[in-house]
Structures are given as C-alpha cells and as structure tokens.
Image 1 (cartoon, one colour):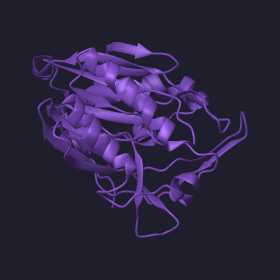
Image 2 (cartoon, one colour; image 1 turned 90 degrees about the vertical axis):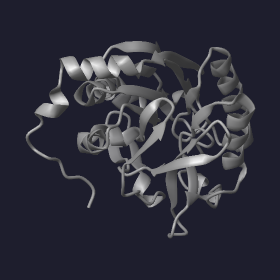
Image 3 (tube, one colour; image 1 turned 180 degrees about the vertical axis):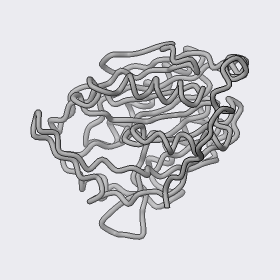
Image 4 (cartoon, one colour; image 1 turned 30 degrees about the vertical axis):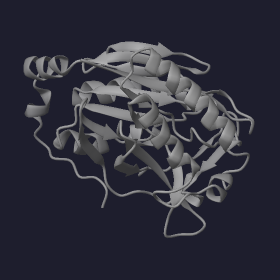
Length: 275
C-alpha cells in the first residue's frame, strides 16, 4: 500500500509566499508518510484580478513555479501533482491551467490542461467567474502509469462532467488527483456528493485537494479536501484551514471492489467527450 496526501491552503497574490506555504505543508505531509502529494488548483497564485495569473505565466520547462515542484519532489523523494500553474498558450492574453505530475526525481512525467472552464454567475452573492477570458482550455484526458497505479488528472470544474472520468476509466484509471478551488457556495451544495459520485461510478480512489478559506482578493473557497475510496467512503477530510489529509491507497481494495461489483463491465452505452 502507498500513502497519498492532499494539501489544503488559501493562496494569495504573492507567488513567493504561496510557494513557501506549499513547501511547509508538503514537508508535513512527507513527515506523515505521504509518497504522492496533490496540491490544490492555483496553489502558486490567486491574484487580485483574474489577469494576474497571465502576468505570471511560465514557459513550459522553466520558471519558479516549475522549479519549485521539481525541487520539492527531489528534496522529499516524493511524487507531486502540481495543482495548476499558469503556462504559456498560443494566445498571449490567455494561459493554460496546467496540472503537472512530477516524479520523485524531479522530472515531469505528465501534464493535463484543464478542459472545462468555470464561466458562471452566482446570484446568491453576485460572484461572476469567466475563466475562458484568461484560460485556453485543454482537449484531452490524462492517465499515466505510476507506482500508485494508473493515475488520472482532473481539475475543479471538470468534476461536473462525468464523461471525462469515463474516458479515464476506459484507459484503466485507478486513482484520480483532483486539484480544486470550489467556491464556498458551490462547495456547500455539491463538492462532497460529486467527489464521492466520481469515485463510486468509476470504482477509483479520489484524491481531492482544495483551496480552503478566505483569500486576499475577497473570495471564499470551500475547502473540505478529502480522500475517497472506490466504494465512496471518505477516508480523511479537512473542513477548513491550511493543512493536509492523507490515507493509504490499496490496490487490492480496487481489485476486490471491481470484482465483487463489476459495474464497469456492465456498461452498455459508450461515451463521447471533447471534440
């Protein structure tokens, strides 16, 4: 069995301060035995304006955010799912919200660019989000072989689109890392039920790392980072504040659950996703 962890924090506009806090929490998770650590969406920057992340964009393979992830992985001999960081896109006014998987040697072994963008108006508190104005969407799901099993990557709003996760199931996914920054309103309504549903539907572990707290820009995120097993059981959860959750991922648990409850073999209708 392998121990995995999900980091929770409340990032702000200062990249250096965010990286320092992320490093502190990674160290704590490693001390607790974690060999795979998932950071939340936008862990390195949550700016005062949505355009701030565009100003801090990095070219693939270089820049302080990517260097931080590689350094932490090497230092702690651990695998890291790097939340999301802003990487250059073909459109100079937009970035890719890139989720990088770094191995224990500090090497990038996979990249997933957030596909589904959060363009939503929340009437309850008059919050409006238009991620498509500053983010260029990705196109394909990502599943990669790791020492922890076949690992899939998804980000925040992706959680509402089960067909993406079915595509990962078709590729044999066994655990899914989900960096997120759910709003307080949508989180209270839907976060737990959606995370557990994706685990149950696909008979996978979900490692859901969330932003959690009040941010300098006035935003409130829901938190409740959690790790969920293939039967939908919450193994660990952190309601609010900075910290981490951790649990053991047991390959036998996946095998036994899929053998005893072979729902994936009973599918009749193939899914289509992402043109």
